[in-house]
Amino acid sequence: MSQDRTRLVAGCMTGTSLDGLDVALVKITATGLEMKAELLGHHALPLSDDLRSTLMSLASGEANEPIVYMRAARALGELHADGLEQLIASCPLSLEGEGRGEGEAQSTQSTNDKHNALKLDFVTAHGQTIWHAPRDPRKADSSTTDPKSWQLFDPWPIVKRLSVPVCYDLRQADLIAGGEGAPLTPIADWVMYRNSSDFVINLGGVMNYTRLFESVHETVGGDVSPCNLLLDGLCQKLFNHRFDSHGVLAGNGRLDHDVRLAIYKATEGVKQNGSLGREQYSHQWVEKIVSYLSNQADPHDVLFTACEYVASACKTVTSPRWDSRPRRMVVAGGGAKNAELIRQIKVLTDGPVMLSDDLGIPCEAREAMGFAVLGALSQDGVPISLPQVTGATNPGVAGVWAGV
Image 1 (cartoon, helix red, strand yellow):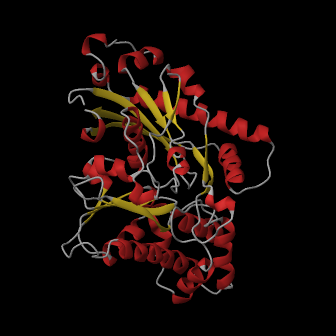
Image 2: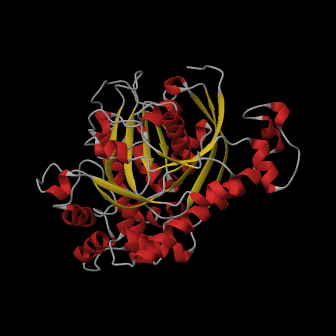
């Protein structure tokens, strides 16, 4: 495999929390598992209220006409194209020499010419998960033994407006091989963080982890517990805010054992292993927690205790099962902006805790950058899912390509 090959790849991600789109511009040097990834730029933009509302309806399993799915997929594609154009426009002109050759760079300010100057090789887009139905080992009916997952997305607005190929639909190769289809990011975490961390903790809608070892074939990971689906859901229900900005509301609370009991009680019977998502931790699940409290708890205490619940789950997964030395932990995802949650994680866990920002990768850019890496691995013929993580048997090379 070539050691001097350089590619410019953009990775795009909208997460379970439905709070916006993140786009990352990544320089990929070398190929396959020898590649190195460098973040060159990051851009975020929110979902419109209409698109967010529609995607929430689709992800909640509500009945919708087929045209609603089609319009939402196209709107997502247009949003991605907008984000990519804005990212490229924000890049310094010094990046124009990156990619396929310095001599081909064009010093022009128009959007189309900047696309040509940057020589973007391709885009990797995750799409929006609107339903995830992995294999459930507790049940034997065909609906759970034939795993499926739907990442809604229309890549063609990107192909048309940026004239670049798009790699998408990355979970199906793992699912058809009997895997959970998630998480896919551990192999990308290994590329991005293996020299600087022992654990990567992603505080997204669901908290998941990657335990990094020297060999990618020993690296493990998985979903752990609800995170922002719990914290944001409670904040919306109790304060009518979309989220607890910087954890200020939770920081004004204290631990309430009745709240902790209500969370555990609401979670009884909910699938808590394998890949997790909104299917398990829906608005109805949050409402059940609140109903168990019977309006007796201080709302600030509820958020504080919910942070403690997530931090305790983080402690469990990073406990010394592999060795007794302090473990370096890097934290990423939207929940990393919650100062109270980070404070509690630092209190409860052993070893140094760093934000991904400290390593030059903004917390909110980690997944988008990771999908750029996954796309590059797929282009190189490397299966991106790890059997020890997803349970797949001989997963093939993932990804559908549009505009090739």
